[in-house]
Amino acid sequence: MQRRPRRNRKTQAIRNMVEETRLSVKDFIFPMFLIDGVNQKIPVASMPGIYRYSLDLMLYEIEECVNLGIMAFDIFPAYPENKKDKYAKESYNPDTFYLKAIFTIKQKFPEIALMTDVAMDPYSSDGHDGLVEEGKILNDETLDILGKMSLAQAQAGADILGPSDMMDGRVGYIREVLDSNGYTDVSIMSYTAKYASAFYGPFRDALDSAPKHGDKKTYQMDPANYNEALIEADLDTEEGADFLMVKPALAYLDVIRLLRDNSNLPIAAYNVSGEYAMVKASAERGWIDGERAMLESLLSIKRAGANIILSYFAKEFAMLNR
Ligand code: PBG
Image (cartoon, rainbow, N blue to C red):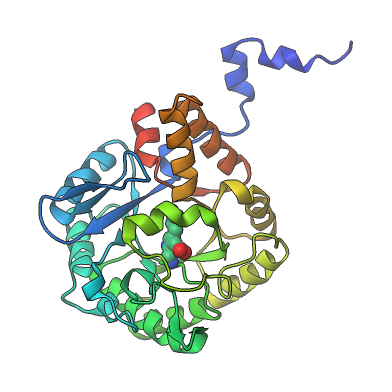
């Protein structure tokens, strides 16, 4: 035999040299769940190891993560039913707890990249990402609300806005609102190819944000579709997105590669709640080695072409690599 690929696998030292993909703590954005109140740390039942924190305890958690090298966080607030309405008004109420929390977090940790989610669902009594009228999700009317929410988050100090609602034209609309109010430096990480996925289940438990009726198929993408991701990527790019995102990650590695090969923008992938829960649940039963499954999943997302990974595993990964 002239060629023996196994020679490049014979020792750890050689395997290290030929390793094509390497994960770093710098690759990660850590999504965190925020609740109102003080001294609250409530486990999310379907996401072992993940909690909803009140601001005071979240600050400690962020400090620990920063000490482990995590520099980027995405904050998702959970609101009680009595704060929700049809128009998601709480999302831009200047006195609401999540905007104050963003301000405080940014004051305490000016060096971090703080990301926020722009979508109506945590604040909507319908549990949808857009305004609902007679069972229909209205696109252009929703943009107006997203604009107000975006401006409020920028004013609170968010560095990166993450429009996750999949309304048409949102990136351009938000960019225009930000720029005309002087927030030209606030970035947009667009959820470009966000699929109507079963893997968001545990997240909706964490935020009590499941749709009250219907599903999200008229705005989130059909899992069957691949080329359509390029249409979304072209629009987001034209409209001024700074980053493109694919979500979920593991069932859509081909879409991550597609966007990586067809765009010059940084590509992010969201390793979502259900993907986290699957690893945790099977590891708890002793059916797989949770740590190895975590590392392999994260590595595969990077190998597929993601430059940035949003993952609930971020802290666990950072702890292993300290
Ligand atoms: C809502 C939003 C969702 C997630 C992030 N932002 C859920 C949804 O679209 O229903 C899911 C994140 C996860 O599952 O980890 N706009």
